[in-house]
Image 1 (cartoon, one colour):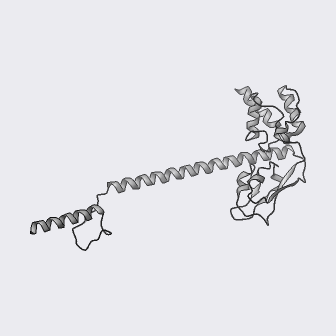
Image 2 (cartoon, one colour):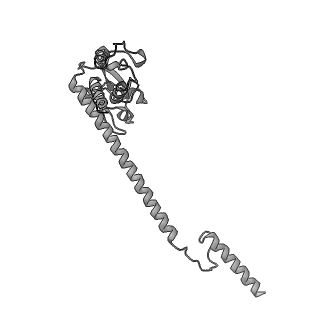
Image 3 (tube, rainbow, N blue to C red):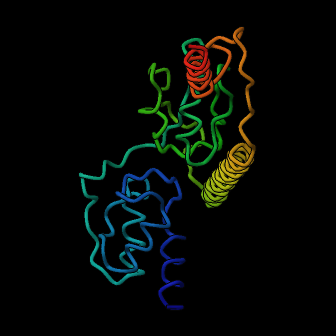
Length: 225
């Protein structure tokens, strides 16, 4: 188990950490786990390019392969750019960004932190008004520093989402317990008694009490005969 964990870490260190999911896995870490288990090929990561394929082949002792076209093509790095005049502030791109490189809030303009964008493209299909485009990255080199920073932001993104989910679940549990106590208290209280009163109407008393009043009046009339 320790050997496999070490191998996963070594593979993960060779991956670009763009978290683009083009490999078919939800994260670079998951792709690394799949490679370590022999369940996937080394040619499924377009951002890693030929250099990444060669590095994985060397580490795993596998033959070098051409990039699988089903996973994409090798191309120059690009970054996302939001047309702020067309942005409607829906925040869907913020949720889609795996490295929290988009800032903004609901019904407010969003913008991309250019030097943090990993070029994953996941924000494009998330935008309902197509106001996001890809432009050339002025800093074409995806350095080790940028790669490590992207991984850190990805981990922080998922930690934040996990905390939000736990807090939401805790609120739901508290609300359910509160509702349960309210229902229990209501059930324990005796039903209020209503004296027979000719001035009461069906709208002011319960149906059972109203029916009881009618029957009582009928009984009184029978007794008077």
